Length: 368
Length: 104
Image (cartoon, rainbow over all chains, first blue to last red):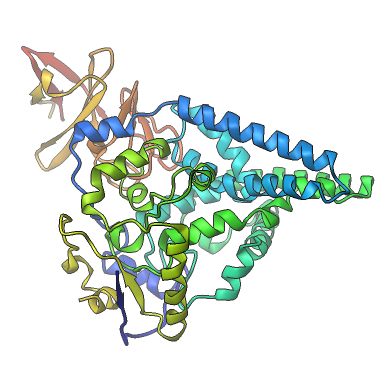
């Protein structure tokens, strides 16, 4: 790992309709050719193969954990014994749905299309991401990963807003923005930024979903008022706040502190080795360089893909804690110099970074 | 206008797989279905111009390797987001062990 600084230039403009968005298109950073490790077609075909079995198994366990933890929370509601059940329920609701939204959105979790769609809709509601809007925003994230002005899913912009990052461990700003967006969409309004990545014919679908969700939340609030109890809201809506911690903890590691405006996922994404519980919640998205390089590979095949191409990737970060030990100091440095980033070191067996691909932007130029 | 062009040998493509074929400055994708039939479409995804030959064939579906957009390669129909525009398809025949496509 090399720390890179630069005295370069003007602050980043993350607006999807702003200066850097225009520059990214003009200088070819948008919709660019990205680096891929060479993998023989036969092996890649095997890795890409879809199967219902692993995701059905995981989904049965997942739904059972939902039911048991919700039942425990309801049964013990009013005593402290409900807290561990709500902790589990909240983490499932506010964090594991992030990875289910993600994998089923790619259509890779199950082989059967309707199964992907069903889990996708269920997860989208819980993680509060409009299934239409976020399908298209994630498409853009894969086209223009961490390209300033183009990628709508940059979790930590530079200089980092650390208060926002901390608040999002409790889902506060994300849920607030999600609610505002839902009400706006339900009123039939698609924002200018959303229009940059949602095709016109898809926009009515986003509005229809927002209206359905708004009705569900209003019904839940009405039930809570009728019962004079917070319990309905503790099971629908609020878990997105008190259970968000795990998806934020793992999500920040995906790209935090690494390079922006480059076209090599080895430079802007991080693979982190994790414990099995986090990998179940996260559905193996800790293999994040591998996922971005080959998004066709289902979550259950990512460990195999990692073994196959690790000779060409930076050494994986050994733990979540190790990830934060390198990322937090980088965020603090970026407060003073937003061009600072962590450059991932490659093993001797890897193909070197093609610096000539990145010479048109100040950050990559600084890396030389 | 309606020339038949030799694309490859029939055995060059595995069953339930796809191969890229470039001709006259254009790029095509040639498919071999699980039923051992051959089909051809434009080679680039209508969403972001990625080569479909790097994608995955499942039954009668080709899935784009970049954003997982799905098409029916037999009809060219786009199967939903993020692909909204159908693929152009081309007639294919197998003659003396060679796969020919009508590129006109």
